[in-house]
Image (cartoon, rainbow, N blue to C red):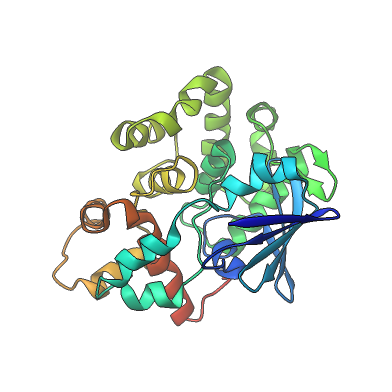
Length: 287
């Protein structure tokens, strides 16, 4: 990776490039807006940035050296060896065509609290509605920043009334969000300990929060806790796994275990390839 700074921007060049469209709109994160012509605006950790697709990399604006090192380097997973990962997946007959089709897709490393709440909201939901609910929640309770609103802190969500949460389109998930905010305010250390925990321990701890089942827990582990072997299974991934492994007659938890055993530390990226590739084939991109 090579980074140069031009005025208020960081220009990032990567050996295998990065596909911002695939990375930002494959169901990992919900606070990015497509501005057209390869430009995308998002808010992460209270910073509003525009990411512009470049050949072999991207431009981040505004972006200081401090912001790049503190936020964006990890967020975009820029130090991971995706070439080595793709080489392993290209050797797999099932994954090879999807790895080629989704080349440049990165797994984002998101703020843990935000990731937990947004994936609680994602349950039995679609990407467009999730994004709308998350933005409404940020506008209602988040701290104003240049370019929008930061994601609300636990205390800011805890202060909201149930009716206010429901007005953001959360439906029955409003109770889960309220309960999780209250519990994190009461014991923030339990959530903070997850990134350093073993997979099974962290997953069990996450599933003690209301509204967090197997799939949501695996999403948080993959997209925020560095558990690259996590394999979230939703309806799209279940459909893809049954399509490519016809003999696989199992529930979603068993499918996840099978994928973790089959793909090991590359399971999380394999899951993103499966999910994004199938949705694109079905004409559901950005749905």
